[in-house]
Length: 161
Image 1 (cartoon, rainbow, N blue to C red):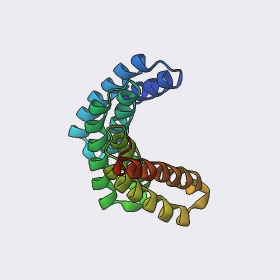
Image 2: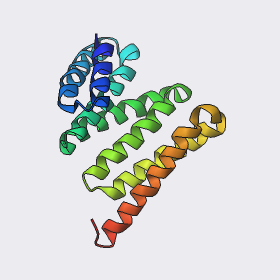
Image 3: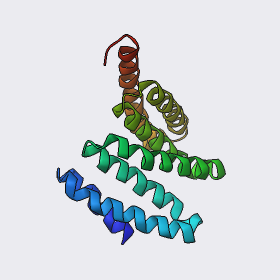
Image 4: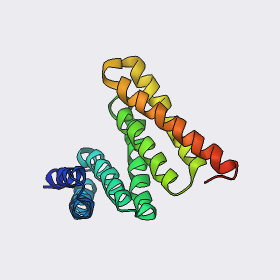
């Protein structure tokens, strides 16, 4: 059920139905939080994915402050998982770091966003070196995002917005 709700939120969002996408995303987090409490080894990764999804759904609705805590929680979970099983969870962590950088940027916290994006890009660079067929596209996309975030940070530091 949680997986179906998670996917429903994504699909509704892809159709531009952002307000309708939020309740399934929230329900998926609730269910996966309960599952992760009982079976952490099995469901923490899924919980992190649903937390990222919830952050994106909130962000799409312009609720940027509310989008930050679930995204931060997802990164915390991904860091713990990647520390234990780096080969298995580093790609998830890299994507979550990039996502958190976007959430921070939306709040005008560009310097923090750049630092997280740099960390994510470094992970993707390593992953791309190991498996270019799988990671070339996310590595290129993360580098472009880092470039944009860095520009925004420089503009903010120069008195821009």
